[in-house]
Length: 116
Image 1 (cartoon, rainbow, N blue to C red):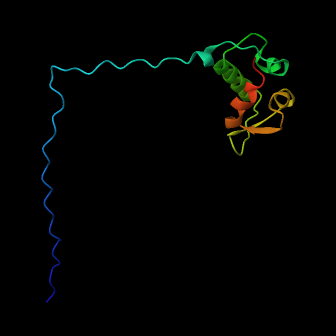
Image 2 (image 1 turned 135 degrees about the horizontal axis):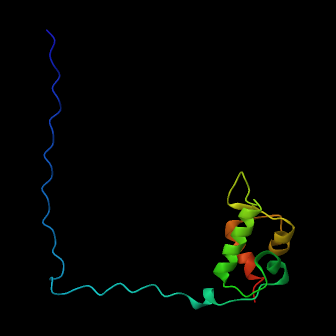
Image 3 (image 1 turned 90 degrees about the vertical axis):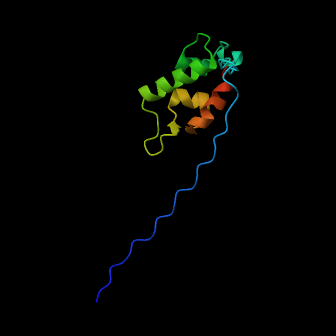
């Protein structure tokens, strides 16, 4: 005679712990302060002649210089197809970077030398 297998017994759910109440409703949390902008990043800096050939000669903030570089890189399709984190330098960017290929993480450090 064949016997039917019994389903394993279900375990009882653990009892819920009592929730801890926070501070009384009368006390309200202070409103979150907005993050302050670092003035050093927003200070307009004059690019060197090599960098000015790519981003223009007018003074720009560091953040704007990086944005303009990415516009140039994407326009001229200089991102490496195999590894998108690498940038293949053309003649203008080679003057700025000093080598034929850089990673996008190196880029910000290398352009700092061309800003004053």
